[in-house]
Length: 303
Image (tube, rainbow, N blue to C red; front, side, top):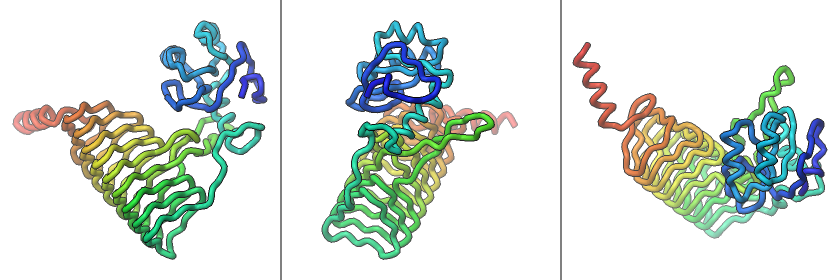
């Protein structure tokens, strides 16, 4: 698709360009993409990303965007117009294939699905899967072999992606991506795992991951193999959690945070920054566990 083919009011093409998908500036979808930028930081990221072929920016950044050599379009509100385009493409308002065509559900052998479960469309359920009563599986969900989904869990729902439009309200951004769950995964009672935003992307739950009850996993999250997530944990959008991690009871992990392989997040921790592989963090905001314990001891002694 070309920038010049977009019909959004106020959309001004400064240099035409081709793109296949939409994505954020640092993404790697494997296809040429259009992104939006609202600051020099994200413009620099987009300019240096070989997969980014087109940039949508405000007039303030237009000259710098043109210097990148990429296709450039200009609007007064790049973020809003980017997601308006995303919604238009998802709803089929352009002669352009943005989302994959719907397929009938595929269900493997020896899977036991409760008659009280609610299964949407375009889903794949592997062999020997157990889906208990009152589970809801929306669209674009792929479940591997030997998985257990306990009662009350919702898979493949939408996340909190709304664009503020002032007094006009909030634009609800359509979720077009998927949710991929590996083999030997167990998701216990009343959990919510959202599918991703863009059609080329998936929320991913790796092989042998175990998720306890009342956990929220937001859109675009990636959880590596064999990680354990304790009850009531919340994992923000696009967070990356490595393999063999422990996410403790009632922990909160902010959006886009990276947790290294083998790391441990203590109960109740609020993680707002990246955690190195093998580290243990505690507290609000989370810090190295030993430093946290030393600080707590000093406070107790001083009081």
